[in-house]
Image (cartoon, rainbow, N blue to C red; front, side, top):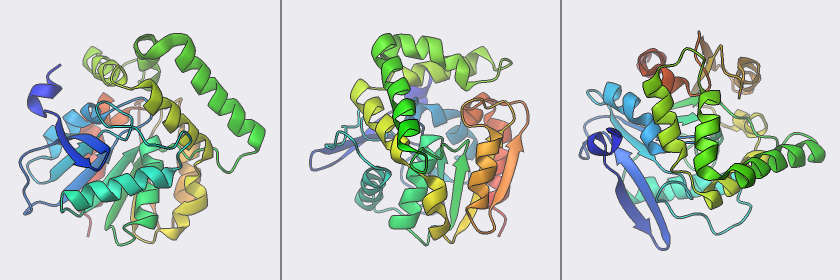
Amino acid sequence: MWVDNRFPLQFITNGKQKISYRSSQKLDNNKPLIILLHGIGSGSGSWAPMMSLLEKKYYTIAWDAPGYNESTHLTKSSPQSIDYSQVLSDFTTLLNLQPYAVIGHSLGALMAVCYAVNHFPNLPKLILANPANGYGGAKEEIRETKLTARLSMLRELGIQKMAIERSSALLSPTASSEALALVEWNMNKVTKKGYEQAARTLANGDIIGIGGKYKGEVHIISSSRDNVTPATTAKKIAKSFEGSSLEILPGLGHASYVEDADIFSKSVLKFIENN
């Protein structure tokens, strides 16, 4: 896969916690930093097309969340979103960087909101792409049903077969073979432990319940053919933030930033550069 040559993995360690990540270039403090957070079935490499498009004007960093790719997993068996956001905060501190914008996709959106609310309330720009709200606000039986379904799928299929069978569900039927290959390649790098922890975090997360605490600028991107976190969910999340903007990208599936990085980046840049 071209990603490893174009944006090779880098590593940083904080005690026992190692984080693997990719960056658009060598550290350049003269460019605004955008941090990119992937979802539950993905990894840092999924952001490579976006990084290519943004790198002329922005310094971009895409991390592998704890338990993903070569990042060590969290110590708690059932972590909360704040546990991931704490690692993200430590990660930026170790790099001596402050993001101008954070883009979180799907479960990464939950992590991004938690980071902004608890660690960086002055974050200038927050973008939630095809956000997964989480089921923390639902009844316990619903949370348990959703969690059991995810864990059962993982145990029955395993990572490799899950990547083969589930990748197409994250894209529209008209997605390119290159987009499908990139989604599958990243899903293959998911670890069993990391996925299980993330599934428990998703079961207990609730963007709508905490989002209103963040008073910065928020832009939400959804897509019309997203069957995982549909536009109806994005609209509800948008209402939980004061003065947020919402754009629904036509024809794209859940992994919208992979399926059409050009259209996705235009939505991002329009928001980020609107001062």
